[in-house]
Amino acid sequence: MTEPQPRRPRHLMDPAAPRRTVHDHEREQKSLTRVQRWVMSALAVTTIFHLQIGLIVAALFLDDPRPGAEVGLCVIAGAFGVLAIALAFLIHGRRPVTPWLLVGLVPAAVGIWLVTR
Image 1 (cartoon, helix red, strand yellow):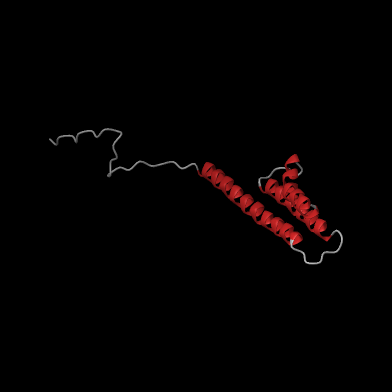
Image 2: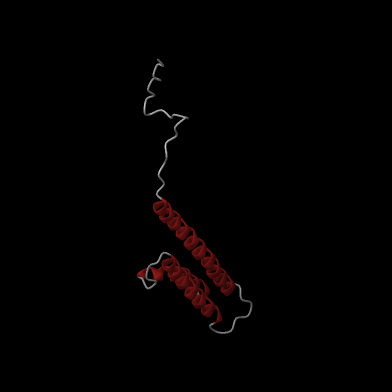
C-alpha cells in the first residue's frame, strides 16, 4: 500500500493546487473610477488656475492700459476660477452650484487689490 502524503498546513501554498482568487471587479472598477476622477479634477483645476494667474500677471504688466482694463482682466480671471471649481464638482458628479465657488474668486480678488493699489 502507498503511504498517504502528509497533509500540508493550510496556510502554506501548494504549487500543485493553487487557490483560486475571487476578484471583485465591480469594487476594483469603482476604486479606479474614483482615482481617475480625482486625477482629472486636479488636472483641470490646476490648469485653469494657471490660466487665471496668467491673466492676473498680464493685468499687472500692461504697458499702457485703458481705464478698467486691468480690473477687467482680473474679473475675467475670476470667472475662470469659478469655472474651474464648478468643473471639479461636475467631474465628481456633484452639483456645480456650491459655496465653494467663492474659492475661485480669491486669486481674482488678490489681483484686483494688486492692480488698484
